Length: 427
Image (cartoon, rainbow, N blue to C red):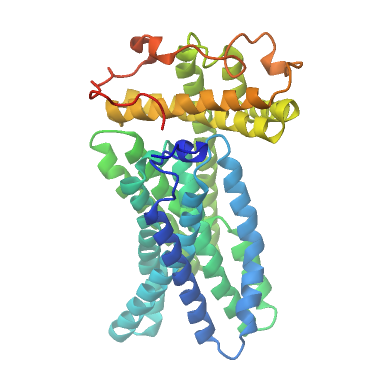
């Protein structure tokens, strides 16, 4: 069996190949997005350039918001393929599915209720339910198939936000096309509303589902069953409030919906800040148990607690040992963060003991390999960075054997018996 790469270990994969389910999901999402754009062209075949112009108008907002989400995700970044699938699902599968279902629903209602009531009911009720269901399906998939990737509220918000941004990107193309085909100058009002005033609509709605999924992934008990349902209900409510408020009550309803969503946005920011502090607390709580082994030092824990400290450590490692040193330091930082989160899972009993010990063995081996890679490239001892001064153990020393460490000091369940002949090293 070939050795796992650092990237595979950090992403919790059992092989160096990308998961087939994610690749299939990405391909399906791409095909669905192309079909959605083709349907837009079919709606307005006389102006093929409107599709291109609409995409150009929609891209700047999407790029800025994707960068913002990636900025939020720096402390414990999610696998890039997972993030790409989340964005693609929103832009492809969710968008095309919602377009089909909404259109069929409005057609049926038009026969029963008439065109105008059908449009109002579709926009204010059916569309929020259908769209949040399609977007939430991706999060439910992650909960069932890739549950280990969701370690807290931030992960739920990140995946949900990217899914919502993908949906908003392609949907905005349609609205901008309609603006280009209508009264001259109306397009800029549409761009102002959808691209400047309320660009966080879809990401915010789906973030409610993401919070529910994150709770289910990190907790036990009855609450984990109801949390995703409550999150989805909150997403539908916010979506319906925005759509229905503007349709039924005009500008006043739009202002009310905007104020409510501003409050929700502030709450999400507070959740993100508190979750960042929680992760720093986990690092300070669990990693000191590894100090006696030499794997971690007190200065390492301080460095891992801030983005500034991590960036400074990588810069110092690059100065000492080049690009390999910087990569080794980055691998060490991410592995140490994953180790703290792994202990949190064990304490909450959301991971079984055997899986815990297997995963811990991979992580601590990666941390040791990262240190060795640094030393192989480091030509000679140099002046340590400020955060590493007086450091006697950790990244810059060879650790003692981890199996000598008392298990009861690690706040983990007893190690299950190993079958005879089972290799203890990372391979």
